[in-house]
Image (cartoon, rainbow, N blue to C red; front, side):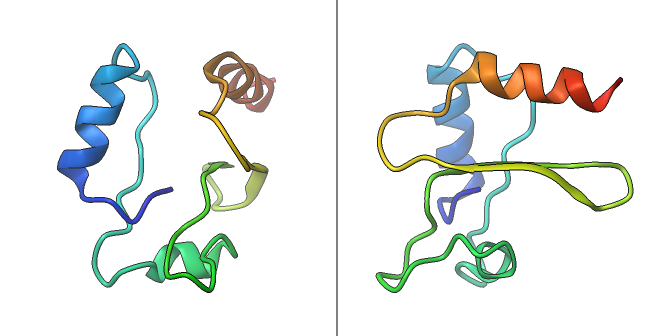
Length: 84
């Protein structure tokens, strides 16, 4: 979840070796979706987070990262758990 543009997220994904899952650009209106998922802070930024939502729209896993980058292996493991 990022308030950056889809172009910025595309570059980020490419820098990570092209991520095998989509990234959400919450660019306009700024932070609208981040606010819904309670990851928008008082500084006007979305927190670094990974959120997995199932086909029924239910949040199945959410993690906020205080520092560093999300762990791709951890996210992929959580995705695999959804398929069970």
